[in-house]
Image (cartoon, rainbow, N blue to C red; front, side, top):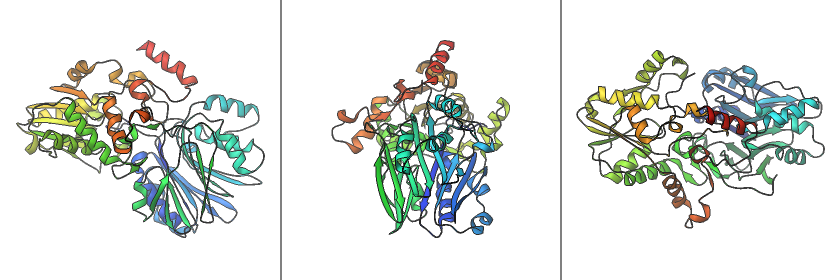
Length: 476
């Protein structure tokens, strides 16, 4: 499956407790998170003494139909939207995963990637575990079943064996749980619907549509338990750090989400302003590649004093499955999903703002679209640093050959995409944009974000991926 935007995040998770309309609200919540995964969706909910699961390939509206929602009554549910980066596309890997054991019911949904999954799976299989999927998300269920004692102690011990990035929502007989990895790489937060109903979501954009009020982020290394309208907090690790993925701000999250206390639109707009200061260029108009680059384009235009215009039009009714992975159909796919607004760009010197360049082919085609529409010049400005290194934390860029900036410098890349000029936002500027929003003492917090895809400074042990990383680099 081919996405003209070039990057895909693994998934989004949602959960709701103690609400009589839990199924419908979960549908709305997952629909708000649809941008995080369009390949599959699912929901697990309580039914007397067992958990029911409805899931399948496709968009939320394809899987969770009115017929499904109206057929059941429940007060607790967890949900998931998926883009596969680990485990493949089979139905067995669609989440949530749900299990009924003789002494308990368990279900979970996961966003992220477990770095030591291969070693853990081998160890668990040697002790009798039989996996029902090839996804690393299932590991937590098996680890829990090999632990003894109270559930919260089993959960802490199990989580301490996982290394990587993860945000889990987990449903158990003892309550609903939200869990974040000890580095806080993937986002997760809590909102309140009424005195006794709470919601957990990958992004806060899911709250407004259901009328929930944001409470707070789940902290790195924290386990939040919700039961009978009460919230309890536990930490499973003594050493936690704040290393949220910078790409959440650059690309993944919706602009109306607030992540780690910072509004995504505001952060992107500030990045655009800094980009305008970094390398100004004379031009007639500023345009943004829809949708995630619009905020940065507005910021750039304001700072540069150049009019912002809608120079590219996105056709929102072209589905991802329509665009097939062949060169000929990729070209048609770009043209069907994006069109140049000829009346706006013709005979203009255009500054085109985009959020990132991954493989470079999409940028090249968009520059071509603009020039065919009559643009005199196209100056490309990227509101993030060059992505030079693979990601092993739940994003689908795991090899160097997928990243054009790992082999071409800025000048060579400019020639490849046939732009009149090209510039990336510096990493220090990206961090500054986020830090000056939240902190007065920026130096104290300058290493708080995960920037591995920009500077190769990985937050966790890479395990087998380290050999993969070095091999790919040598082959390159």
